[in-house]
Image 1 (cartoon, rainbow, N blue to C red):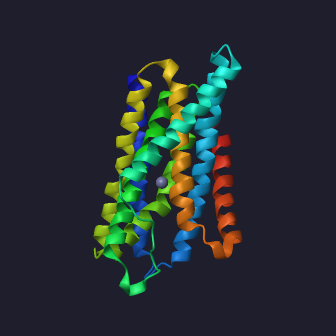
Image 2: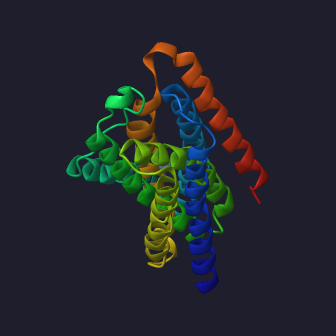
Length: 258
Ligand SMILES: [Zn+2]
């Protein structure tokens, strides 16, 4: 158990720090267009969708049905748990004021307050992401947690870049922006500690923890990332980016299945 705890925490730490690598992307280009950022975040959304289904929702579904004696009751418990995950982040989201990203819209008249609110929002959503990694490590015999961690790490790259761009928009230097992205990434290992702690409640709790974490991730994608990036003008391009992310993550999941 102790080894699981250390592995889970260190992997979540490494994945979280990838946010800083994404932040370094701020030095690669003089200026990023909103459409470019959006497409990167759409790929990240596809990765997260596949990760929540393949690494959390599906394996926990299996485990819960296998354990229960009445499939109707098991299914009901499962569905309610997934919805609890959704509701949990939803309520948190309503309690904390935050703004969806408007980078590039206003050019030089970028609203500093909006930039900060966006940074707060993206920081907070990293908590459920880390929680998911922690729970997956607690459930090592139900799922290979590495594929979920790789998915989270991959999606941290465009997210780190968005954080850095928002930091620059809020008046910080590029170096400070990149470092901040790395620091914000540390919220994930914190979330992982919570997830690992939860799975310590006993083996019976683990599939429910996974279902709950799956619900929180789905909410993050559906209410935070997609509304942010899904430009109504060019849905084909956005859809293509989401599917690219989904397919990449599907491949990663299969490769690390055993
Ligand atoms: Zn994220």
